[in-house]
Image (tube, rainbow, N blue to C red; front, side, top):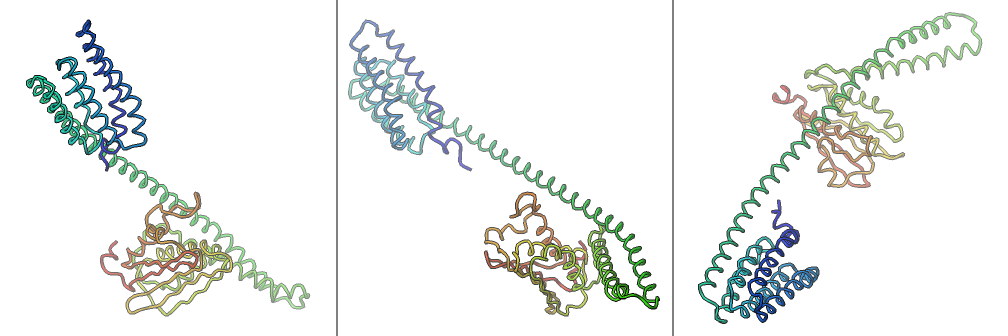
Length: 425
């Protein structure tokens, strides 16, 4: 974190400029009162005051817009040395003029890294000119020491304040990070609650659909049976017996299969590690994701992987998520391909598409919760984070290969039997 007083020297200068002008004004008034009637030194001091005021307020500030602040402050220092020297000469180095020396040093701090060298040059020039002009050495020493230790005290105080401010800013940043994490946790909990409620609702709807579909299937079976037993059917009725009613029963069976898949997929009870058929879960995922894949060509190549140990509903959730994402990323006439094969004690699953692909900067954050490239309202950014969590909980890993314009391939490596730590999760 950049230190506040070093991060913006211009701001520091503007902050002290308004106060800095009050000191010379007060000293000049004191000189005016003290030397009233002594016109020669009085005119000299007032002339110097007018010239320095105009130079500091107008000329040097305009020059600061074109040159660096460090260079302008060096010019300001040299101009003040010249002004004090002229005033000191005409007032025979009155203590009222010496007041300007430590006063100018009080606000050297905080402008740039050349402040200390500038202070040293300032003191050397000021004392050299004053002593050469006959100024009392004790006054030069006294006001130089006053200015030097005043500067050091001011610098030390500002450093301590700067350190305290850095700690406050660091604490504020920490609180902001904690607040952001709390917001993410809250949002994640809300999404999980919505997903849980959606699963319960889906299971309820599936249950309600299942009962009337049973009646429909039974009645159609009975009608078909009665018509087949009736001799001498007319041509339209024979068409119903041979084509319409069997096709209707096939459609009913498909509806019942989808309802059964939905009930099993959305069941909310905890799932233990059991033996299951991976290819059966792949077929289930293809049926559930069918509506998101109908616009593209879907290919499946399921090898002989045998039975595995794991949580089948979670694996179906992983595959549905990957298939839906592939379908959404793939345009019409594109292709989505899913394949399984066994390699020793491991099974490899590939979900490949010919869609838009992803650049490396997107792949870097792909599995982070709430990261999504979809438009607002189209995604929560939780899908792939959940996929990653499920795969790692099975002792597996997931790899991504993608290139913009050439598609994406997700590769899952799963052990046939998860290691004990994963099984205990």
